[in-house]
Image 1 (cartoon, rainbow, N blue to C red):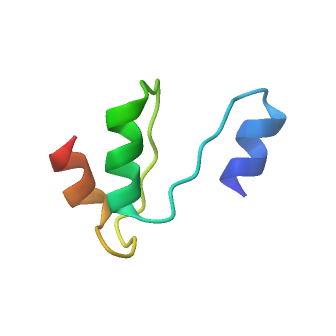
Image 2: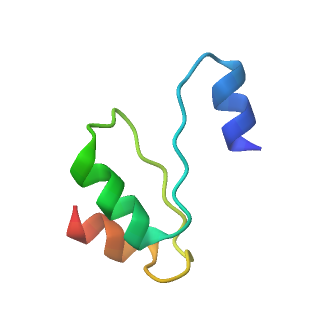
Amino acid sequence: MAIELLREGGQAVDLAKNGEEAVRMVSEKAYATILLDTQMLVMDGVTATEKT
């Protein structure tokens, strides 16, 4: 639902399948805002935040 709302508001949205992928994506591209789930698979959002 959040993705739909952001896109309807004209925002570009990238989606990571898990925290590990999110960390990789951040290393490859600058983001203005990052939303992370604290219970993502492979690596949770808290750990992903610590690694970025």
